[in-house]
Length: 115
Length: 113
Image (cartoon, rainbow over all chains, first blue to last red; front, side):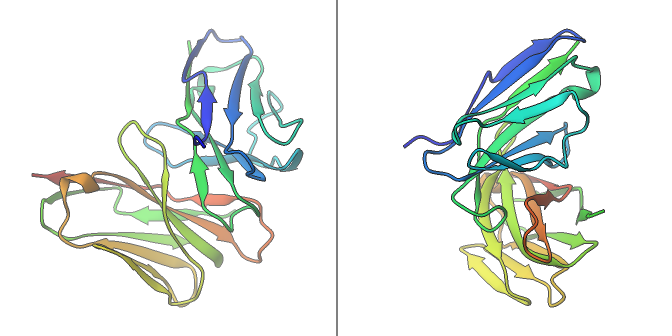
């Protein structure tokens, strides 16, 4: 079916607001990743899910960042009390199976601007 | 920590010229993947290399994985305007079991028609 989808595509938040970013992976993909991409930089790993289990959250920059994938499909990345340095494109990617072994399919990203 | 550097950061070439980007890791990699990101787009998978010294070709693109599995290169022969974009390498650290890919800094290619 369709590829990875993300919503919203653009989000403007005032500093201090909470935001929630959604990712719909490709159906049947076990692995799901979140990345943060600053302007002119490569994607930086945030967190990884295998089905509903969050196996690696070592890339989350602070405890204001929280991600979940409760039923092993759709995932939400939540950022509390947004700061200006959180402004970036947040990319979601899914993969057929084991992390890093198979190609990752990226969604279009959510561009977050914190004012 | 793991670092993956790419050079050059930017490259401008005349259409028809060749282009090469180099990827260097501070640690040994179990595998390396290459992605292309068009302006305003998202990364799209190109290829994966796993074996030491591996070379793979896709039409005008040639990918190499170093013998020590710490570096890789992407070479494009006779560039076309459709090659425009940023090319990222992404390595998975060794030993296997690491859950994430470390993306390189990327090389932005501009092709002048």
